[in-house]
Amino acid sequence: MNLFGMLTVSGSALTAERQRAEVVTSNMANMETTRTPAGGPYRRQLVVFRAQRLPRFPALLAGFGNRAAQGVSVDRVLGDGRPPLVRYQPGHPDADAKGYVSYSTEQMDRRRAVQLAAAIHTAFQQLGANPAESVGTVPEPLGASEAETTRAAMPDQEQMVDLSGLKQELEKALAGPIARDQAAVQVRHDGLVISLREGGFFDSGSAGIKLDSEPAFNRMAAVLEKYPYNLRIEGHTDDVSIHTARYHSNWELSTARATEIVRLLILKHSFAPQRLSAAGYAEYHPIASNRNPLGRALNRRVDVVVLGSMRDEITSVPPGAASP
Image (tube, rainbow, N blue to C red):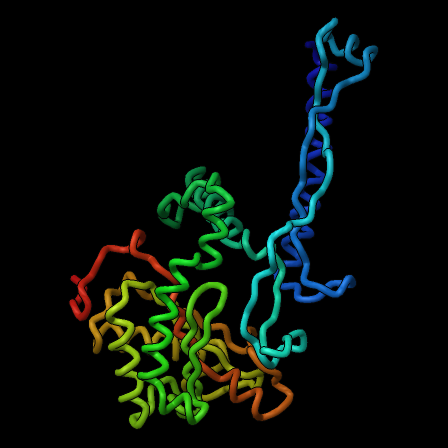
């Protein structure tokens, strides 16, 4: 194969890759889509390649002689056939009669997008592009199977059975707050969610747990201690901006509440720190409309997300044991 041949084959591959990149870009842009012009949630697009055989004369010019000269092209673009991901968001305009919202199947690749960003960041560090920062742990290879990616996004049947039993125990432990509409326990696509609403657990503009809600919080923690699951603590607010001497924005308040819950679980209930993570989302992950007082009250919350069965991913720590 001569230079013309190499350019021809490379050009076909670049053309195909460009189309694939455009499809991936469209997928990423529709990651949070709940409704399309067709009426349903967006289904991610999958690109299928095929070998592209060159015509006889260009093949001869490319130096292939009598051999088959091949490049690559896009054969077709398929729609993902898997069901959309579902969240319980009763206040969402696209919620069904039971309060569930269907989201784009592209969310199944969110984990890979995070891995890719981490890999690029690490590569730049290793090249000395950002020497001030230390090189972190190399992320998991991107070659994980679709089954592994889907498993990370959605608990399998065994996990759901485990979470069902945990859900019953938590509902019993939080029976009082649930009856007063101060807490809720729901199954979501990424695990079990315990919503501790501001009205029952926090004073307005404060990150500390109310004294009269500590018994309920302690009962919840005692149940969670028995299960070897990782927990993600998420702080959320409504869209009314806050600016106090202590917290200058909803970001700071939501993050402070999440980290306060983490602090209590570690110091008071001896949770292993590696089981816990904290995040503040301010007003940007609402579960209800902010146009009325009831919706805003539902949005002001801390969600304790039980991330499915993590027995193979964390070091086993006996219930109640303090971490080293």
